[in-house]
Length: 110
Image 1 (cartoon, helix red, strand yellow):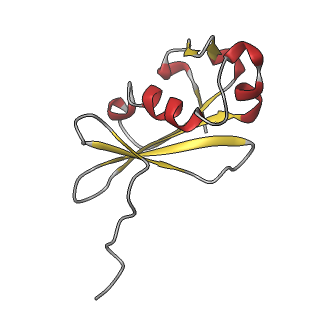
Image 2 (cartoon, helix red, strand yellow; image 1 turned 90 degrees about the vertical axis):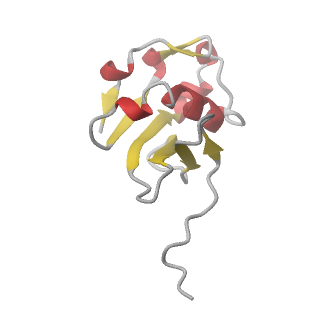
């Protein structure tokens, strides 16, 4: 039996179950979560990143222990609206008092 088609258990799942999320290893001084369609193709939708500096900024009111859940919940607001795979980066100017204040279409893309 081949292990090629085994998909790891997701870290997060939308209420509908249609979107799943995976915590990524830290890269480029960012925390990140990848969003995928929960169907037979497991289509990549989005990678949402937030800089370490943003999380550590006291004005953001975010915490490293809960940042991946925060990313998933905020990313669910627009994960299915992207027309093709995107990597989006949230910086300090985009967060205030634990809330994403910048419209997702205006967030930095890489």
